Each structure stands twice: as structure tokens, then as C-alpha cells.
Image (cartoon, rainbow, N blue to C red; front, side, top):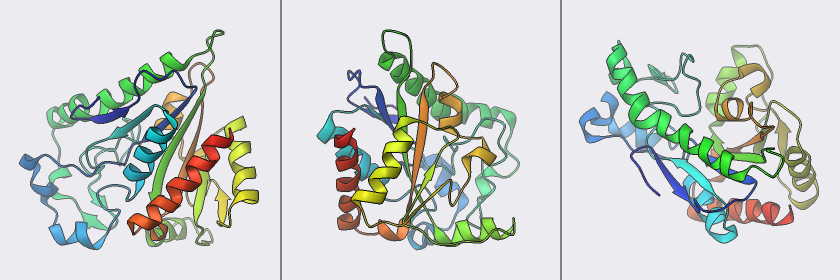
Length: 253
């Protein structure tokens, strides 16, 4: 299923595990003229408009395992699907230190238009998938959302909080403990050579904003986010290696 807001794979699946990719899309409607940003910025920074590599990873995992997946189609600089509606970066005026002119002085009407067209359809579809996955006791399953992070951007963000920065291959983000989290931790330790850390380079327990926080509040659904270092996703071969790793993990559940 496809809309202006999202792409959905395996919509009939009743799996208790749902894959998400809020930043999988890089689309910007032509009328927004690249949001007023120099096209060179998008070529220079692979994660400026979205999260590089995520779409390919999710397509492969969903198709090979038959899992339901909901992915954003539009760029996060149009509206950020991984932010709550009261978050200051929902319509970012700067991204990775670059001004986004079309997000300056937004009218309430324009904000509502983007929410109605691109934001709410995605989140309503996620809620539908969660409802479809509930077990006989009405308990929810798990959300696994895939992202990629830019080390330089993460380092600058942590420097503002006087926090030390160590570049890792992948971060595991969450706000609550869950069986999915425990199994992912064990898998990365025992079945891969990747360096990783918990709630790093961003701490969801402090941020409390995003799809996991929005959707896991209901029915006992628990969420985990993977933040893969974008340096490990620059080529198709890199992305396929990560897809293979995630597929191996999901097969082990």
C-alpha cells in the first residue's frame, strides 16, 4: 500500500513484530523547491533529507520475512515523522547546521496541511498495524524502527551537553526494557563484531519524543530503535550487509 505519506509492506500480516522507517523517505513535493536548500547540500550530506540505507534494509527484511513494515515517503525536513507534534524540530528551521528556508515563519495553516497530508496518515497506519497485531489478551507486540546517524552531527549534539562521544557502529535506543531489547543486545554481542551502545548517540529516555514513545504507550507494545552509523551504509553492499545482519537477528526470534 502506498500513499503520499507512507509505503506499507505486507499489510495483511498479523505478526507481533512491526518494522518502521520514519526517515526512510527523501521525497519533497516539487512545489516546495527542495525546501529552499541548495541541491549540493543533499549530495554532500547523505543523511540531510532522510536516513541513508534504511529503505533498502527495510524492504529486504520485510520481503524476505513477510513482516509488516511502514515507511515514510517524504523527507524529514518537510515534516519529521519521528517527532511529537509539540517538538521544536517537527518542522526544522535548520538541519545539520544548514538553514531550511521553507520552514521559516511557517503559518499555522501550512503546518496543519503538512500534518494532515504527511504526518498523521503515517501514524494512523502504524496504529492500524498495532491493532492488527494484538494477541487474544489484547496485548501488543514489538516495534523495531531503523535509522542511521551521522557521527559529526551526533558529536556536536553531545558536546552541547558536555557529554563524551565515542563513535559506534550502531546504537540501541529505547525507553523501556523488553524481550526484544534483551535479545537484540545478546545477538549483537555474540553474533556480530559491531561496536554498539545503549541509548547512544541519543538517549530516548531523556528525549521522550518519537514514534516509539508515541505508539508504545498503548496495549503494552514495546519499541526499540537501531541507529546505524551512516558511514557503514554508504554503498549498496554496505546496506545489504546490514540487511543480512538484521534478517539473521529477526529469524532468531
